[in-house]
Amino acid sequence: DKEIKRLTLLEIMDYINNTKNVFNDETFQHIIYMISCNLFRGLAPSSSAHVQYDPEEDEPNLEVSWPHLQYVYEFLLRFVVSNETDPKVVKKYIDQQFLVKLLDLFESEDPRERDYLKTILHRI
Image (cartoon, rainbow, N blue to C red):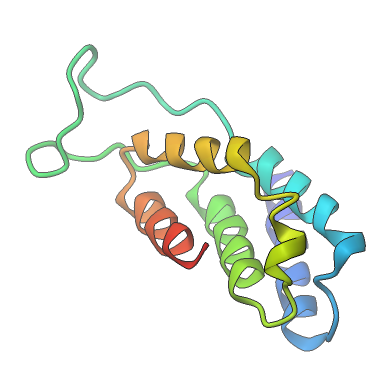
C-alpha cells in the first residue's frame, strides 16, 4: 500500500516536471486536498513525554513515514515555486487554515520535516 502511494507520487512528480499547465484553477483544489490528506496528521508522541522537545539537546524521533512525506513536501514546494501558479488564485486554497496546519507541523521532532516546512513557508 505504501509502495503504491510512493510510486504514484513519483509518477505525479515526473508528470509535473515534464508537462506544461499542470497547475491551474481546475487542479488547485485537488492538489491542496491531496497535500492536506497526506501532511496534516497526528504527530508521534514526544520521545520524552510531558517535556518540550529541544532540538539542541534531544535526539529526534524520525518520522517513520518520511519516505512518503518527502514526496508530498517536494510536490508542495514545486507547486508553490512554479511559474504556472498564479498567487492570486492560490490564495483561495492556501488560506489561513491551511497555513496554521502547516505551522502546527513544526511540532514534529523530525528535522527533515521542519527543514521542508521552513523552505516552503519562506516561498509562500
